[in-house]
Image 1 (cartoon, rainbow, N blue to C red):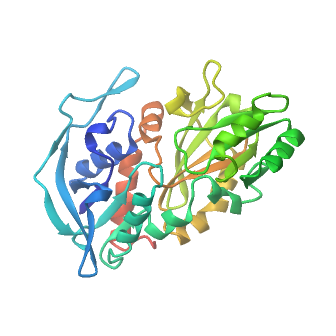
Image 2 (cartoon, rainbow, N blue to C red):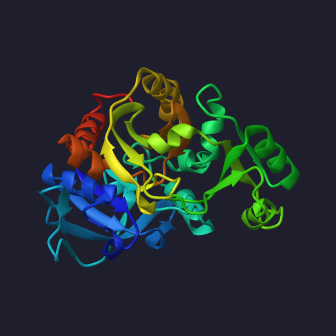
Length: 326
C-alpha cells in the first residue's frame, strides 16, 4: 500500500515518543510506501485533493533498557513530488493541535479525497465534529459533572458547589492551560478572567476527581475497540498527569467500567470515521476524546511489549481488502 502521513515538520518529532513515528515505522515494516506532507502543502486542483509529498525512509528506534533510542539520522526524505491524494491507499491526518483556522481549512481540503479510492484517518468531518474537550459531553453517563461557559458567575457557582474544579481551554493540548480552581483561592476571579479572555471565550469546567492523583489513563481505540492503555501519574506538586507535564507512565489494564465506556463510544466513533482515537479516563470517568494526533503508543509498547502500530497496519490491510466494514 501507499500511505501518506500529514504531520508537523518531521525534524520536530520525537521518534522515541511520537505515535506518528511508531505508525510510520510499522507501515515501513509491512513493506508499505511511506510518504509525508504538512497541512500547508495540501491543495485542491480541479476538484481533487493534492499534496506536495516526500518519500520517507526510517531507521526504527530500538529499546535500550527502559527507553526507546533513535539513531541521530533516524529519517531520510526524498525529493518533493506533487500528487493527487487519491493515488494513495490511506491518508493519516496526524497534525498536532491546536485546531487552528489553518487546521480547519486542511480538513475541508481533505473532503476532496475520493473515499472510494482512499481512506482518510481520521475522517475530516469527524475531526471537525470532535472538539477534544466537548466531544465527551454527549456521553453523559460516562463523564464527571461538567459545564462549558465563559460566564464567571456560573463558574464560581460550580466551584462553590463542588469545592474544586478543573478548568480546561477548549483548544488546548498536552495539559496546556489546565487550571485547578479551589474555593477560597483569592486568585480565582483572575484565573477565570485570564482563561476566558474576560468572558469572551468559553472554557470547560469539570468536577475535580481525587482519583486523578492515582493516574489519568490513556486508552487507545482502533475502530472503536480498545487495543492498549497506559496510566499517567502526576509527579511532585503537579496535579496534571500528562506526559508533557512530567507525568510518570505505568502499565495499565482496563477495568469493567472502562470497557463499558469504550463500548458506549464505539458506535459513534465508527459512524463519524474516527478510527484512531485516544480517550482519557480518570477514576472511571471519561474526561477527553483525543482525535487529532492521539499519543501513547510508544509508552504502551515499551511497558507491555506490544506492537500497536503493527495492529493498526494489519487492520488497515484488512479494511482495504474489504474484510472489515468501515
